[in-house]
Length: 345
Length: 191
Image (cartoon, rainbow over all chains, first blue to last red; front, side):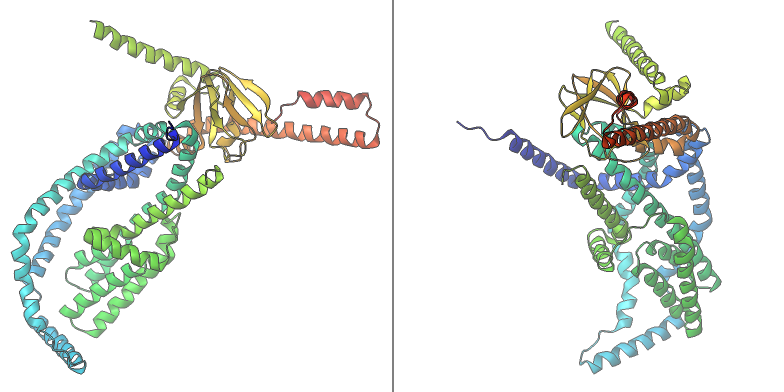
């Protein structure tokens, strides 16, 4: 009687364990996503805690101080900006200034009709569809309400998780590394260290660059008297994390809103120039200063990741697609390179 | 009462174990200038690893991530491919410290001769310490640099002696002084 090779049994068990873990992660999707976002927040805040520790502060005190400062910043920022944001959101719901809106819609509708005619297609009335939009949004509100409540709960849980992940991060990391078998121990340490070197600089740099672009865009939009300047500024900053496409999307959004409300070409051209200047500042000043490491991703990879992220996870997926792809790329690259150096590959 | 006893016994045993580790650490040239508090901070970032007899700790040629300190058991340092045992290390001995500075390939294989408990101190932890507690990191880095410098001086001396011995052999006249040099050469550390 022959027994199967114990190595194959072990590999089979590992595969089963891997599949079980993936299934568990999918089943606990919401919690896993929350934990991942909290881990990202903790990872971004870690250098601040280290700086305080280097000045002789205990880690727990340093984490407490960082969270206190962040809370003060978020709450005071919220108190100042929230009324503006809500007012601007309300503006969107009630609509643009009626006469300008009507004139622009007429103009756009005429273009669409002409183009459709030349292609032999009968276009539906744009005005009717646009007028239906606010009612449709209001109609969807009751279904969206539980989602909004969940989002609020998540917003409370993320700081909570982040605090503990930041405070206990080193011991959690040590505990996980300690569980690695002896043969793969140094290899694991080496891979994690290199990933941290590559990604830490990239992710923190992207975050700071997005923040600076959001502030600059908001100031420019405010100076150009563009309505919803705050919302568009924040969207432009967030979109900046998507290379190539993001900056264009941010500028386009600002120009479209400006055209719809002010309607002058000169105004739009001014905005375009301002956004090009912001981009140049971002590329030539901010990014070289804050991005200590860059993860080279090809335009095709960026486009694909944005499409996949957007399809699977909506707006959040759209924004996090590029950093997530960068994490994946660095993980695979560092693992394969280090495995080869340790003669596993 | 029994539970309480075991609770206190546990705490006291842990304290004793921590003290034993710190007493061991202070004997190592890298850590001899550290205060009690600094030793405790250092202990927090060390990894305690257990090895079975015969288990490999690292292989010659692999990139080194850091150093090991023998807490319990015996470790053999083996030169490949000859399989010659260069030395055997036991309680309080340490090896691989240059890997703390640079991820260079290991110059020999380390294998557990008996069941071993080692304390591992690795480059990522040292770099992390440098950003969190630069004063402590510098107190470790300075003797490490001195050890590396001494190794360089020894290697230079060894190279010079080998060079002279080679010349003497080429001339075909190994004299008394050459034999003295062989002796001196054999007394120098291998790495």
